[in-house]
Every structure is written in C-alpha cells, then in structure tokens.
Length: 329
Image 1 (cartoon, rainbow, N blue to C red):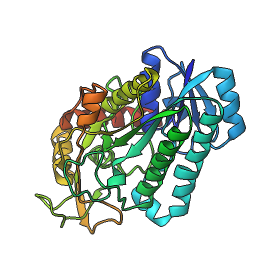
Image 2 (cartoon, rainbow, N blue to C red; image 1 turned 120 degrees about the vertical axis):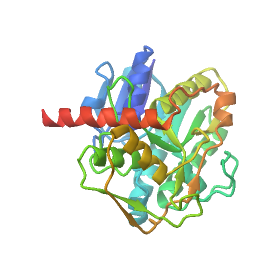
Image 3 (cartoon, helix red, strand yellow; image 1 turned 180 degrees about the vertical axis):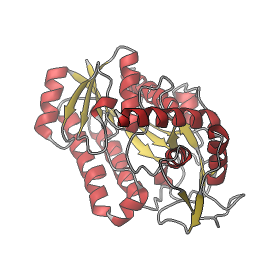
Image 4 (spheres, rainbow, N blue to C red; image 1 turned 135 degrees about the horizontal axis):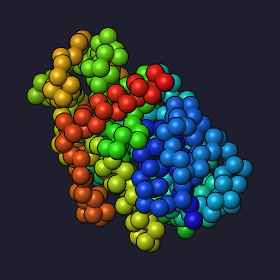
C-alpha cells in the first residue's frame, strides 16, 4: 500500500514525503511543479507531474500503486494574492480539492489528511483559539480552505470515508537534517523573508501594520516548526488507519510572537541588524492568532520536539545558506 502526497514537491509537502520515507512508507507524489521542485522530493518516492483534478491520472495511480491514503497539500497559500484573485483561489483550493475527494471516494480510499489553515478563524474572539471557535475567514484563501473542510465533513457522512483536518498556524523552519526547506522564490513567510534579508538576498523587508491591539502594535502569530507539523500529520494518518473517527485539530504551540519579536530573534541568531521599513496593514491579515492545540496533544498524543523560536530561525537560516549554494551550482 502507498500514500499519495499532493503538493509533495513544495515546502511542507516535501517534508512530509521525507518523513514518510524515513519510516518505510511507499510514497507517490503528485505535483504540477508550479511552485515546488523535483529535487526536493525524496529519491525513494515516486514523483508524478500532474494535476490533482485529473481524474484519469488519479485512477491510474491508485490502481498502479495501491494507494490507501491521501495527504493533500496542493493549493495556493498567499492571503493578499487570494484577495486580488479570489476566483483563482476557489478554483485551485476548492474546485480541484472537490475533484480529488471525488476521486478518493470513487476509488475506495478511506483515509484523507487535509492541509487546512488558521485563516478559517479570521480574527478570533478567543485566544488561544479552539477548534470550535466561530469560523469567519477574512480572505478568499481562508474561505477556500473552509469550503474544503465542509466538503470533507459531508462526504464522511455519506460514504465509508474518514478524514483529518489539520489547521496550521504559521509554519516555519526547515528539516533539521538539511534535506529540504522553504525554497519558493518570492515567498511571503515572515521568517523566510527575514532570513533572506539577514543573508543579503533582499535589500530590505517590510512590516505591515504597526497599530494592532498587541503589546508592540505588530501582528501576533503562533509559529510552528515544520518538522513538528509533519509529526502531527504522521499521527493523524495513524489515527485514521487505526479506524478512529474523523478529526479536526489545530497545529501550533499556543505561544504567540509579534512580528518585531520574530525579527529580533532573526537578528540575534544571524548576528546582524535587519533593514526594515514599516507600512500599513494588508487586506485579509488578522491582528492576533494563537492556537489552542490541546486536541492534537490529547487525541493524537502529539508532543512537539522543536518548539523554540530561535531553533526554528536557526534551521531556517541554515536552509537559506544551503539553498544559495544549490542555486549557484
């Protein structure tokens, strides 16, 4: 039996593939390579370049590789872009996810792990935010992910099908073994941008919004190391394979850091001052989002191993240095 990882050549997906391979799973990666990289995929995995909405392709892969589970990362993730191009996001994140879920049902695949987001909460009233908080996304990105969550819940009621929805908070860092990391050009992740700036690959960076209702006026986020996030996916997959009920769980550390606190951490680890300019808030951004992750800890027995901001930054910086050397070859 094999696991199909969609978007497995991307940032989080490539970490998932390495994690599955490390524990001896057979893995098939389906990726268009629109933002991912073939070299980021573990060589033991089978990489297929294609679209998740290609029904015939999915049918062939299931038959050829005896796929019993899908871990779905493929999608668009940039909040401001979703505000500018909502239809593109609904197509890529919702319509194509619907096609993938239909393929899973048609082929009798009963286990489905979905990469969702804390953006489904919008500007939450309760911090840390629990999974049963009101769902009121502020951007088409968040709405597109929420729509897929709703589809999964409805499909599970109608078919022999179980799912795990993992709502990510702010994913950062890189594989501690240096095998993969955030490699997308022009990425907007704060720690990625700050590390590129610290290493001189950007002339400077911007902070968007300094008038939020937070201690220093900048937005507050819960940053989770990508390797801890992958551990949660492993446990979610095992949870479903063991015959347990569908699950929705937050993935974060329940600790918030402001933008300025993150920048200070990068400056400390890199040993240099960052050139920073300050601008207005961006559309679709929430002031403060921190996870209540007790469900993941209790139900999945998830125990983070890398929950330290400076460790996250150190791994991200090491990857940026490695990536620069790769790009120079």
